[in-house]
Amino acid sequence: MKSKVIMLRFGEIFLKGRNKSFFEKLLIDNIKAKLEDVQCEFVRTQNRYYIENYDESLTGELVSRMKKVFGLHSLSVATKVETNYDALNETALEYAPDVETTFRITVNRADKSLDKNSAQIAADVGAYVLGKRKGYKVDLHKPNIEIKIDIREKGYSYVFRDIEMCAQGMPVGCSGSGMLLLSGGFDSPVAGYRMARRGMNLCAIHYHSFPYTSEQAKQKVVDLAQVLTGYAGAIKLFIVPFTQIQFAIHEKCRPDYMITIMRRIMIDIAEKVAVANGCGALITGESLGQVASQTLQSLTVTNDAVNALPVFRPLIGMDKYEIMKTAEEIGTYKLSELPYQDCCTVFLPKNPVIKPSLEIAKKEQAKIENLEALVNEAISNVETVVLKPIS
Image 1 (cartoon, rainbow, N blue to C red):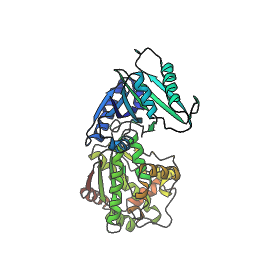
Image 2: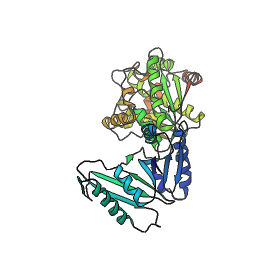
Image 3: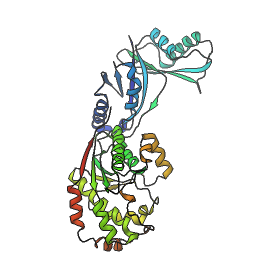
Image 4: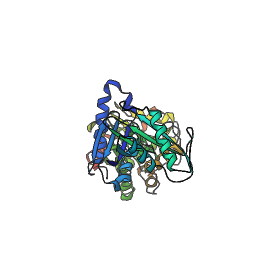
């Protein structure tokens, strides 16, 4: 009996002690959700999971899906065989291309009932491969090819070469829910990704200033949220009509404080929507000092508009290069660079204040006499889009 399997290894949850079962259950549920449309078998053993009995033409697709599951550390496409020395020799040879190269055999033996230890099995399999591949030389330190043999309990072994890294982190769902302030830029999708990687379910909120921002700008944000579902699972996206509030800010407030006040109102609305939808935190894509609204003073004035929830800023110490590199890796970069303006670019002042005063910001915001009514109207007219991962 010989078959292809995908071997899955979990990472950080290994350290969770008595709570490990809680995290492992979430991880298994998230893996199975990625497999629900695939005819296959999910097998769980001690410290290992396997995807078995699947159509081998789907191997690439399944590997791609598993790499996005937070909580998985790495995976390998392996050959499963019955544990006997002839089968191990023959299978190892299949992983040894007929070229001149250096190699080694690495054996992990969980089955202690065998009459040989790991080093002896590795030496025997290595001798067999060496006898069949005349251009091979043994190099135990820096070989070009390493063939790995994992001998497990219950009479089965797994032979493979490559270990591919997965998304790592913690299983989505283990850290509560957060409301992501999602714009069309590079930063906020990366912030959402990083918080999902720490186990947080995501909701998202976006501010749309129709007709000054186009339907294409709104669709761009929907598409960004859709990409994030590949990592975070289903996302509920709230699209807030923001035009009337921006008009009021533009009409009543000092030009240099417009962005500051806009950010305060945005985060106030985000908190209200978050609380109404069971989210325990707000998430922003702010990076310290990147723009005028992200100085220490600006962040302090913005925070003052939040009543109860913590504000997570996972990008706070990252520079733009690091953020854009991550955007490329997770698949949001090309969408974020599309030239469709979001509401943050409407009515922008030429010289926004860099070090705003909280006292002045409150005074300027108070000039908007009907602000509470405007906020309530915006919230009552929120458009809700529920996005699910696309298999």
